[in-house]
Each structure stands twice: as structure tokens, then as C-alpha cells.
Length: 378
Ligand SMILES: Nc1ncnc2c1ncn2[C@@H]1O[C@H](COP(=O)(O)OP(=O)(O)OP(=O)(O)O)[C@@H](O)[C@H]1O
Ligand SMILES: [Mg+2]
Image: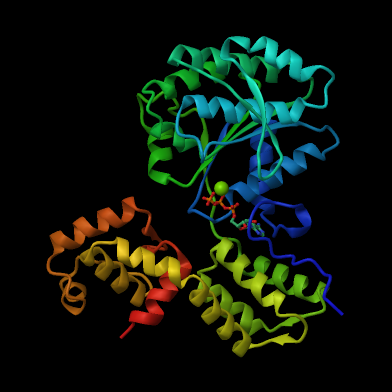
């Protein structure tokens, strides 16, 4: 009979606390900030679990004894102020759409921005699209949306995911403008989140910048090994499967305990069906994964200049390097000179191909790192 158990290892989005591993302390810290009406900014590597944590907090807030209204706006796909407004307006609309006549009210109130209701062709989710022609239009649009949000007769929390994106907008005055508009709502806690540590730290910690000291920074680290191990074993157990301790620890090593990659591997191991997951099964999944992603990795290789690729390979082969400009590392890997390594290093950081973490330079995408290591380790 076909296995009907749903795979508990989610690799995209958030379902419910049942599929979310721990993060109890982090959740508490964010909830405490919210109840004291402090702003907080979540920073971590990509795919470590920021969005998951935001959604988990959102879930708790919406299901608490005193349910909060949570506006969650994802700025990742937005390229300018107009798109930011679309994202916030859509989040607001989704929250209040069940109220009688809310759509008419919203369309009327924002009529100067020519709002339109659209449907996402893939998800079927409703969205609001506006037409804003100037920076002044963005400011008044933001004021209007926040006004409609503030009318909600519940405690309100505002979440801005991938907030550093506003620094990439072509409009130059976004930071002071957003800051001054949201400052008029001191009772609403704002949660910002993003993976660009450098951009967010500059934004919130440089004197002279509009958001200076307006939010507490919180660095989201890896999940604790014992918590994650418990979560994995319990989920295998519920699915009538078994995974050995040694297998779990191999998965943690291979994925550097990086959440998305752990989830991805466990999802595939779970998929294998009943029986015990030993070292052999784990090895074969590792191999399958890097083979599945191979076309994408070959593409990266074709797109990168030769020197940058050589450096990337060398970093992956050593599973991270503390001093890439050292003479020994340069000689061993034929990297020419410290200055050419510095230049390539900088270019690879900008492309988010490598990152400084765990006190060394590592290849950012764990599977890519393992593929490089597998093919190029001498
Ligand atoms: N505590 C958790 N337990 C189980 N799965 C989790 C947990 N946190 C995150 N995940 C899963 O890990 C993956 C990556 O998490 P998420 O998308 O939250 O990371 P992120 O830091 O927002 O990444 P990005 O920078 O790419 O936006 C997702 O598939 C998510 O479902
Ligand atoms: Mg995210």
C-alpha cells in the first residue's frame, strides 16, 4: 500500500508548530520584544530560518488568548518603492478582506494611487497593485496603508522580511521616509529581518542613518544539535521509520547543521520509506543530491571567471579556509598572488558564492560546496 504519511521535513515555508523544530528561546525573545513594543531585527545567513521564525511567531500571536493582527510583508521580490507598497497593501488586504466592504473602502481611500485587485496566477492569492508615480506618492501611499492598518482593533505587529532590500531601490530617500512614517506609530512593534548582515548592521548601527538604534539586533544561529536530533528522530519514529544516531550526526556534519540543507536531506531520507537509515543510506542520499543539482552547479562553473572558480574549488576542497591569502594556500592551489586572491574573494562575496562563517571562508551553498569537494578534492 502506498505510504500516506506526509513528509514532516518541510523545505519551503511554514506549516505549523508541529513541523517546526524548537527555537523556543528565539521565539520568546521576539515575543518579549513585541509585548514591550520594542523593534527587533533578525539577522542570519541565508536559509537558516529567519522567515520560519517570523512565521512561527506570527502563528503564536494569531493563536494566542489575545490574538494579534500580524502584517507580514516580504520585500525580497520588490525592486522599488511602488513594489514595496504593493507588498504591504496586499498583506493588509489579506488580513482584513473578510471585513464587510473592506475592499471598497481600501480602493476608495487609496484611489489617488489607482489600486487594482489582482490574483496571483499560481497561488490564487489576492494582491493589491498600485500605480505610484513619485517619491511623494510612495510616502502618501505608505501613510495611507499604515492608517488602514492602525484602525485594526487588535494589537498589531508589523513584519518586514528582507528589509535590506530597500537600500537597493532606485529611490534615494526611502530610509528617512519609511523611518519617519513608521515613527508616527510608536505603539506598533516592527520586526525587520534579512540576510545581509553588513547592510543591516550599517542601517541600524551607523550614527547618522535614519534607523540608527531604532531596533535591537538579534543574530539567528544554527539550531542546537541535540534539539534538532530529537526533532528528526521523533519525526522518523512517528512515520514508522528509524534513523541511527550516527546517521543523524553524519547529516549534521555534511550540511554544517544549516537548517534548509538538513531539512532537505531529511526530507529525502524520510521519502525512502520504512526500514532503518544507516550510514549506507545516508551516503547514497548525499550522492543523489549532488547529482540532482549537478546541471545547476556546472552552470555556475561556466559563468565564473577561471581564477574565481579556482579559489572556490580550493575553499570547498578544504571545507573552509581561515587565511586564503596565505602563501601556502596560494602555492598549493595555483592562485597566483595575495592580491588576485583578495580580488576574487571580494567578487565571490558579492555574488554570495562564499561567506565568512564559523571563523572561516566557506562556500555559501552547502550542496555546491559538497559537489565541488567531491569532484575536485585531490
Ligand atoms: N526551526 C525549524 N524547524 C524546521 N524547519 C525549519 C526551521 N526553521 C526553518 N526551517 C526550514 O528551513 C528552510 C529555510 O528556512 P527559512 O526560509 O526560514 O530561512 P531564511 O533564513 O528565511 O532564508 P532566506 O535568507 O533564504 O530567506 C525552510 O524550508 C524552513 O521550512
Ligand atoms: Mg527568508
